[in-house]
Amino acid sequence: MGTMKTNPEAIARCIQEARTIAVVSHVNPDGDTLGSATAMRLILRKMGKEVTLFCDGKVPDMLCFLPGAELFRVPGENEGPFDLMLAVDVSDEKRLGACAVLKEKSRRTAQIDHHPTNPRYMEENSVDGGCAATCLLIREQMRTLGVKLDQEIAVCLYTGISTDTGNFSFGSTNADAFRVMGELMEHDLPLAKLNRILFRERSREQIKLLGRAIESMTFRGNGKIAVMKLTKQDFADSGALSEHTDTLVNYGLDTVGTEMALLAREADSGQIKFSLRAREPKRVDEIAKLFGGGGHPQAAGITMDGTMEDCVEAVLAEMEKAEG
Ligand SMILES: [Mn+2]
Image (cartoon, rainbow, N blue to C red):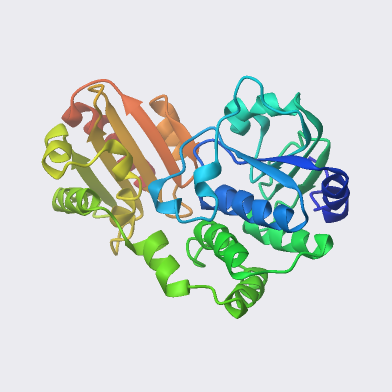
């Protein structure tokens, strides 16, 4: 991988020499990639550039407030050509999805990212694997470009910084994040309003489903494993969709005394889908692999065929072994 260092000067040269710029976010877009891209659009427009936003994936409802969120699209048949393609927060080429075609339609390619595993797949790569969010690197890039902050850009940058740091609670949160945060506040960042949208509001369906999930919670492994189950009936009664299960498993792990959590749900396909979580040093990725799943050490998933009871007992047996 070599040394991971940002190179805002090289990116600035690419930008200065370009007139038309394609800014690209990653598939299954999150707050950091969309915040980075929408901020970049505002920054580049201040420089008189012609900007097009691309993303292979729908902008989540929660992030539709971002200025320019409605402009994202998948590349069409006769797209471009562009002077520059700039990917933001895209950890590897596969995460470009259908936007990968823009590489051939752009005279130059560049990226800004903060994933330590980034293989530097563009011509110019400004990558800092130790940075908490790509939006922090966008702030650095603005200085090199000589573009000043304003309230709209502050909203975009805050979205990426706050979501990638778990609202300033993950281990990756550092002094840098707070220094930039201070600057954003000086530009009238509507903090309370954005916090409500990003971290508190849920749809009625999600709240109803949350109730079902919590009601189903039981404890195993001497109380150290929280177990939640959602049936097709729970989804039908609440009106929620399977995408609404996203963060529910965290309620298991947030219960005092637990070290691992499991949420199992009946998918429309009839299969059983698992979300597994663990608190360090416990891990769930190896357990997930045993059942053909995968993920990160502390957050993994599995899809299985079988009845809810059989599947849950099989996975729980392995989790209890790991709990020892
Ligand atoms: Mn990110």
